[in-house]
Image 1: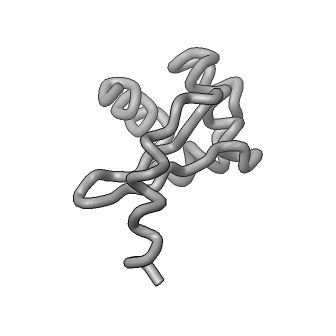
Image 2: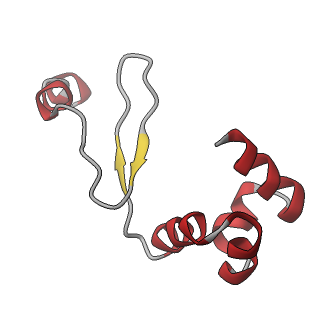
Amino acid sequence: MLNVYNVLINRFGNELKILMEVPLDEISSVVGDSIANSILLIREGKVEIEPGYDGVYGKPVFFGEAKTDKKRVDGLEGYLR
């Protein structure tokens, strides 16, 4: 996956430009339809963000992927207020 990231950055510049400005057909021609479709979902606000915890980074959730154990995340709510 890091290779895909590097290809995109080398071709188009910075992350924000890739996520918001570069035409999807150009992204698709460089890294394929799957990545381009994922970026489209981000642009349309259709991606959930699974929160991180205890030194674990949060991550985007695409295409109905399973989420982490809700009990683990819900158990932290009292500490976050």
